[in-house]
Length: 251
Image (cartoon, rainbow, N blue to C red; front, side, top):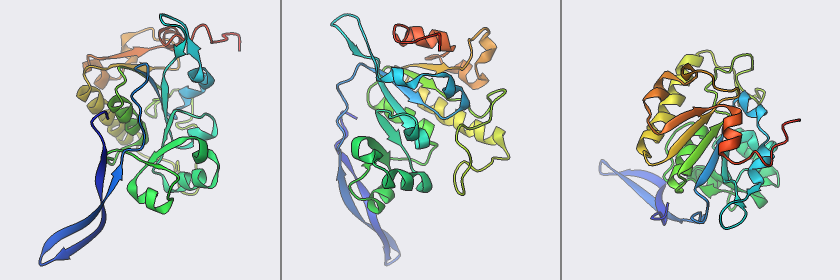
């Protein structure tokens, strides 16, 4: 992102003499995010997220040089109803309309697509070089591009959380509709996440489970072949992310 100044995006498309022509508009970079600690928490909406006290991600910790942020947070979709991450990502038309009608966008950064920028002018920010993907991986991808070198994935359950519903938020008329083939959806999600992790092989990734990790088999099979990825339990995450001094274990 340090080398990203903005991008030319298609405004209209037409054909002339059998050739495809596009009229583009230049959308400049509007978010400068280079002054951070190199630590990010990417928040998924899987049920294990309910075990986390997200307000701790707004906290600070001590160390050399005095207090500093515990890291930036990247979240998706309806998370904004429960927590204000540093950056929110949403391309879902229904959910984005809720955000546009609320006051959330006035005080927070919401990334979306060019099409949505045109629909809701001056409310949202362009996701750089957006590709069609799930919002969890999209948030992870930008956290990497922003230069973070230690990234925690929380609430990334890939639809297999034992004993829980598959999704935190209830289905609406258009969003979070029931999925019949969870296996196919899970494989697509895992593939996108693994592709990003392999691309950014200089980043340390930590997949945080809702329970304590007692066996190497807790890791997804696809994750075992990613050398820069480790699976953590909740307590390990709290300690490694330096949230322990802020965390009240009695609640």
